[in-house]
Length: 205
Image (cartoon, rainbow, N blue to C red):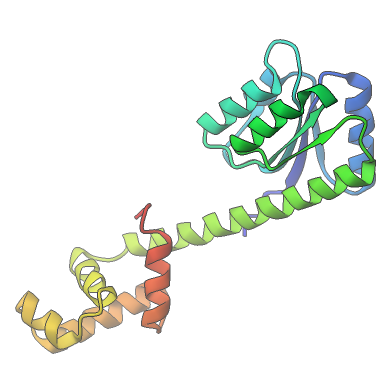
């Protein structure tokens, strides 16, 4: 796991609401960073940000939906919780179709919002862990030589050493040596685990 600290990013143009929410989260021991404009948060956004965004759906200049769209375009994986008025529920539902994890209506109960934030933070931590584990696999795959990669692909396809040797016109002993190197570089002794690892990154490798 990365050591990047999770932060709750509040994007809310109402100063009173923004300050009270900041105090609430800080009292729960959660790091907070608050913004009065969506554009200012977007300026500060970085791909390695961890945590979640509590986002007012209606704001001047750039509204919450526009910020969500901009974050999606940038590949952000920060979970978004929209804060809405009663008349904005249809917008919030549409936002969830676009990837927001949840929404809450004003006025809300503090504990209800805290629970949604805890859930979003947990989801973000899991997503980051999966992404980091995939990156480790991709890094290991990149260390394989072309021949090792070729043999690994045949191993995953279920070919026996003898078959691989015949089809590649090399000795069975050579296949065994390459196979051993593949398993060592990929950090596993199990063919089943190797298959799972490669399948988990097949769209990215």
